[in-house]
Length: 177
Image (tube, rainbow, N blue to C red):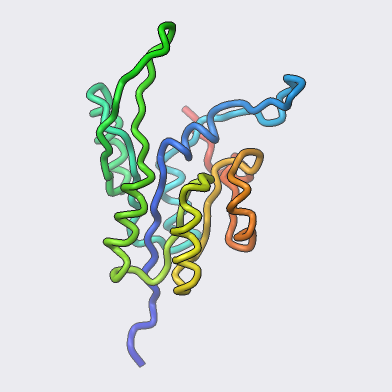
C-alpha cells in the first residue's frame, strides 16, 4: 500500500469572496437581510488548511498598483497569487476597477488538474458551473465554498451537498483588530 494521502487545492475568486461577505444585502423593500462583515484572509487560509487539508490555495486577484502591501501580506499568509490585469472605467460619477478572474480560475484549475485529487472552488458565481460539473464528473470536486448564502447563482443549487457557506463561519473568520 502506497501513500493514500489526497492532495487538495483551493481555487479562490478573491473578489467574489471578499465583496460577497463584506457588503450588506437588502430585500426589495430595503430591509437588510444580511449584515456584511470583513473577512480575515489569514484565518480563511488556516480554515481551508485545517478543515479540508488544502495543500495549495490559489487566490485569483486583480492587479492594482496601490495594493502591493496587500499582495505581500496574502503571499506571506501562504496564498499563491494569480493576477489579472485590471481596467479602470467610470460612469461619470464614480470610478470603478474591474478585474474579472473567471477565465484565469478555470484555466489554472485545468492546468493544475494532474497535480491534485480534490478541488475546492471558492465562489458563488454561476460562471463556474461547467467547471464544477466537470470536476464532479471526474470525482475531483471536494467542496464549493460559497461566500454568501443569501446571494449565489441558482445554477449551483444542484451541488448543494458540496456547499459550505462562509457567512455561516463569521465567528471563526471575521477580521478582528
